[in-house]
Length: 477
Image 1 (cartoon, rainbow, N blue to C red):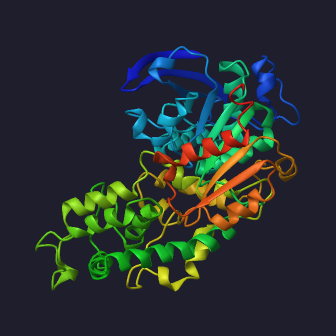
Image 2 (spheres, rainbow, N blue to C red):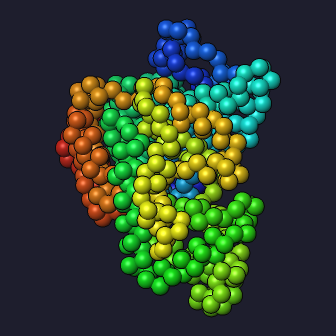
């Protein structure tokens, strides 16, 4: 374990650390590697041409200043995503759950592999890997695809288990999973339940068995409903959005990074609709969409210029330069072992729903769904395009969940299920939880998908678990 720095931000004591982990965990076990045993069990996986053998895993440890050197229980945060780095808090209140957590725990904030200060994956790194593979006489797209498979849940939870064993003396810890972090929670409970003393999740219980097609069949109607709610809240925006969409469809509109603004790109703005106050953010974005006039729709809107501020706002809200793995891995988080080809599941679902057509008015926005055009038009995603075509046709992925072990689970699991969640269907979450031992669901319509970031959700889950006696092992009581 390498400590890189220690310092304070307002209200928090912070330590920065990093360790090395294998790129490819196949045939390796964290417990054996922690003891220095590097022999792989079973068939040795073929090395990925052009890829490194190991990655750097960066993590932070937070504590309340008064507990900076106290031996408190550990809580590890499983970040949402995929492709999201760990929080960078400016104070305990900046991410509401942290203020409550540091009262009881030392908080571990890893940057998942491929993100943040861990070994990052970006368009440039994936392109460089392809060039190295080609120089070695290998198929660059195949090498890139096999490399990207190493950045899914089975690898992430093995990183965390190895981190627990090596950096924290093997002490069981509490996990808190936000969104995709709930997927990681069930993956962790499927593989290394003895490493966890209790688990919390917020808006992130995956359906087991996993199916991308099933997920989008449930979430596309929610996307459409969110759009209807937005226009009901701000009726005048239906005409304004339609005018912008018509202007964009007329062509010759570019975003500040040079990429084309299309109606499909405009629809991506709906990805925000699962968070509060998204309707207001959308309303104020379109408030100054056109360069001339006082915000009204110009009479000749097909020839009107869109404002620089609006175009920058669209770019800011739709680019994934900071986390390109978000769209790249979006559908593969549903791949569990041997599976039918995913084959652009969201695109297939969208094609059967005319209300999402780019010519439909009022314009219906999409949500958390990736589409083939993104890898042809968005500069940060273009380098991933060849690998994506192979991954969408692949049928073999690492196993993620163990339904038998989950049914017999004894680790207390407290799950916040948001009834109106646009991203992770509440019904599917509850169906899974009905088959996970020692699990309890708190179903609420008070929050959207980002409810954990306020000051209520984690405190509620913690108090529920505490009152049930589910934290006796975690807190050493």
